[in-house]
Each structure stands twice: as structure tokens, then as C-alpha cells.
Length: 289
Image (cartoon, rainbow, N blue to C red; front, side, top):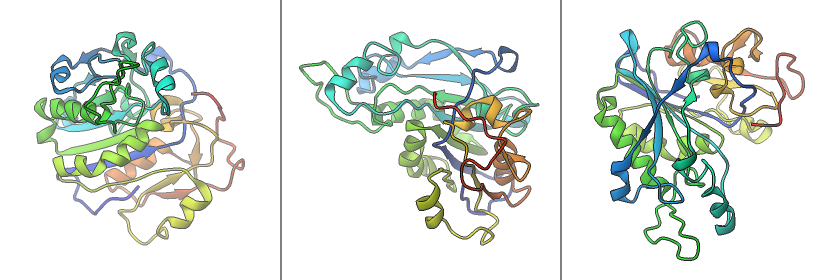
């Protein structure tokens, strides 16, 4: 994580990217289903899923002290590398909004003050992933042999424009997050996000040796935030039992949800790097999404 020093509650946008995680299903007591917003107006702009259906996001309005703050989380789901692979996605929610259903929010999107104390009452958005290329495609022509639409960049633009109209343009704080392919999308779009919302930017990824070698030395700046664990898991910010719950993975007795909050709100220097895998006994290893 990295951010320019910004006084609390001044306009502040950031990007949290997690390419590590999603462990287990969250108990229903922690989160309720959040309805979908089908952005049908985006179709006229060519902003569509692989099969040409409208893009979708889930939205839970903020309240109280969080009414003017936003967290936007980009869904992951890998890439399709060939026309054949992308054509398969037309038959499921990875490539068509026809197959998408309401889902619950947890982790960084959770609405429980107990389990997500820093962001629970913010405007919380999950952007669904249906383009197969981390929201980057912008091919005007429809592929004739498969009727595939490669329009991920247009999808991202259309959804962000809609959120700006819903009030995000007046946000006091904004956080762009993502998991897996959505984490890559957050990296790829963070500059534009910053332009829309005067921002500082943070990156958090978990590639151990090469990544650590490229990092600035911890302690150089309070605005540089790090939480790099060695858990064999995927999308930790999106699952409640790994974000902030009893028994969640921790480094130096600090869980990821608290570490991100401490960094964002400048409560403390938040720079934690785990020992090499598999030393961390708090990890909940899981090979599946």
C-alpha cells in the first residue's frame, strides 16, 4: 500500500489490490444479499459483457459518517486467452449478466461494524466481471465467428460514470479494491480513478521475492502501507473470515482489516511483512476460490 500523506477526511482516493485469497463462504448472519444494478443504458455505448448483455454492479448505500465515502471492489475471475475460452464464458456469469444473481457482501465490503469497522457504513460497490480481460478490452468490431464482444474498458468507464452520477463525484474518501483479475484491473485503472477523484494511490500485491526486492524499505514513510502475508489463499479482502474475524490470518497479531484501516485513516504506521511460507500458523490455506 502507498499513499501521499493526506489529512483524515480530506478528499482521499486509494487503491487496494489483493492478489491473494477467498477462503470460505461467509455465514449469512454476517451479510445479506445485495441487489444488482443492470446498467442497460451502457449497451448503447457498446459497454457490454462478452455475450452483449448489460454490465452489472451491486450497490449498498452509505450512511451516517460514511455517507460521502466509497469503496469500489472489482470482481476477479481469471482471463480467457482464446476465442474458444471466451466463448465458454458466454454460458455463465463470467461472460454474461444473464447468469448473475444477487450476492452477499463481506470482507472489505461487509456491512457489519463488528467485522468491518472502518468501511461498514460507506457506499459499497462490487463491480461484476464479465469481459475476461480485467476490464481492458475496447474492440469495436464484434467477432463474427463467435459473436463475442471484447469491451471490458467500456464496461469499467460506464459503471464508474454511473457511480459518479450517484454521488461518488462528491466523495470525501474513495477506495478502489480488487481481487485476482479484479486486483489487476484496479492497478490498470488506478490512474484514471485518481484523476476522477483527486487521489493518492496504494498497491498491495503478494509476490514474495521479486516483489519484496522491489519495495521501498519499510519505515521510510508513514504513508507507505504494507500487509504482505504468506498464506496460500486467494482474495483475502473479499472474505470475512480472512478480512477481520476471530481467527483471521494476522501478522504481528494484526489482521488485514485492521491494518488497512490503520493505514487509510493514518492511525498508525502499517507496514507488516510476513515470514516465508509456511511459517504463519494463523493462515487458512485453501487452493480453491
